[in-house]
Amino acid sequence: MVSPYVVVYAVKNRFNDIRLGITAGKKIGKAVARNRAKRVITAAFRQALPQIPTGYDYVIVARSRILTVKSTVVAESLLKLFKSADLKDNSK
Image (cartoon, rainbow, N blue to C red; front, side, top):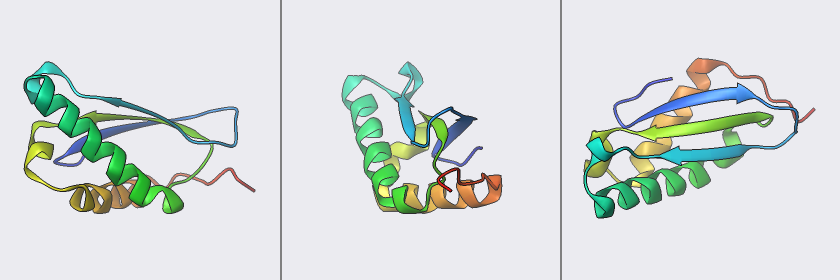
């Protein structure tokens, strides 16, 4: 799943829980920029968490445009990605 700000990989897991991994490569910038990108992704994921399907492992890769936006914009982008991916919630 791709947006201008992040790339999301989702793999079904054996648990009824959500696991998250966040990466920001050196193309994002130096350490300060990479850490800011990871903080923005973490905040956006927390905002979107109630609507994110459970039972999956998510890896979110930061893209360089994430440095120009706030976490609310990224959260909206994440929700659109999860709706378009049509992932099934395994909490039932």
